[in-house]
Length: 134
Image (spheres, one colour):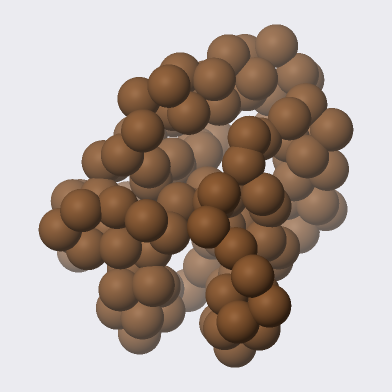
């Protein structure tokens, strides 16, 4: 079983580049890696895909601290979209604390909270869990 699409929502080009490298070198087989620099750009594009009847990404790797619309704003609006097969969301952020982890647990779509930098073990765990749910 393979994942069709992974979405990275992060404004840090170094983190995006590193995540792509990890995806390409750790058992990830995908036709698509979508990258958005902020929550607003991601929400707009994913909503457009949904309106066209296109499938949502299998997993979303979401940073919290971004310009325009942060990860929390994205989660709030994205969780209200009428999506049949909702993607699994993993928060990948350097900004964390007990408050952020508790807040993340309130969103049904959020599977886990991962502290940056994303490492191969985290990514392999995410892929394994996503394949079970697909």
